[in-house]
Amino acid sequence: SGIMYSAMIVFGLGSVIYFVRYAFDSILPLRWSLTEPISDFPLDLLVFHIVVPVTVDWAKPRELFRALFEKWWHVTAQQLRLTSFMFGNRYPEEEGTHYRKTWRALLLGRKAPIPRLGIDTNNEDQNAEVVFVKDGGFVRAPSFDGVPVVPGRRMLIPVNEQGELINPNDTPPVGEDDQLHHTVVYVPPSFKARVIFFLFLMWFCGSIFCCSVTILPLLMGRFIFQSLLHYQQPVHDLYAFTVGLYVMWTLGVGMEWIVRKFQILKEQQIWKVDWPVLREKLVSGTLIFLKISYLFVAFGIVMPFLFSLVIELYFILPWKKYSSNPPPISFLQDWALGIVYMKIAYRIVFMLPDNTFSRTINEITGRGIRNLDVKLATNMFIIPIGGIGLVAVFLPALNAWLILFAAGKSTQLIQNWMQTVRDEEYRIGLRLHNIEPNEPAANVPVSSSSNTNNDNENNNIPIPQNAG
Image: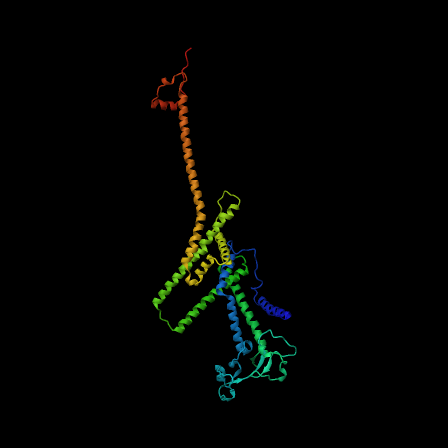
């Protein structure tokens, strides 16, 4: 089995890659340059850590691909008349062939009535344009893959419509409970060729599907970066594939929504505009848009920036080397880090046992995006956490400003007081310097304002010499 699967991978996948490489010269080799970032802002990390997981959770691509694959399997099996063999049960429309006797019936694709199970088709009108003729046969096949293989024993045993063996030699050994592991299914003519063709269609359609979900988004992304965004440097193909996939997915979702609404209107046959209903829907849609916008701004812009700013002010800046220049604050960088911090906090909340925060988040989002509980989100998260963040950011700065303001005022008052004291001491020293040493203090005349001004202009007054 290992050799078989290896051969399937080599020939099945290798042939597709070889065809793509030599049929389309511009696709391969892929561009894997990691030295040139798409921008200085880590937008790619945010997209792959935030946007992609949310999109995957909402779109559920695994379930979508599974539904598409099951639908393809049923349609292909029906066209090859292998539905009974693939899925069990009986399908009367696949147990025969429509024989069209005229060109008119052939061109129009007419079909004969399908007889019910157990009814003989020999009594039908043989002169009709289209006759349904039963063909093929029935086999007893294993019910599941776990049936042990017995050498020399057939896995598909021919039986009649009632499940009775056609060849008595195919009877299982005595005592073997064979009926529990087998079921009777219908097989059409050329059964082996149909199974081989089914496997070929599986490989062919799978290759087309894989190329559609990989190559087309890649080419779309390259076109957007080169022709619309005018990127001169080569862009990593992972970025191009992501952008192209989102653009194609958005277009597909929009077209699917338009087709679905058109089908609803066509089925109801209501083409007249009901203005009251339309007005009500517009008001309801506007309220939903405002709620989503409010929560997006709060949880997507404001709170991440505050969260990152608090972390930087209290945990990062104290460990940095002191600089006389003010620390730079980049809004985009801090916002991006805040998004990462909030994602970590969100994961921690839901990793812990049942708690108030996890229950509150489930209550806010439990009724869908159209019925978000904005009041609960505001009371439990936006006001408390946002208020704490604002206080943590602005209160120390306000305290520092008040301290600096008080220190400046105090310094100014002290300087004024010191200047006043200095002026007083200067005046006292000036007066003492103008007193004559041999003259008693009582005989010193009190100078007038003019004399005072004159004394101030003449700093040194001549002292008379003693006679003798």
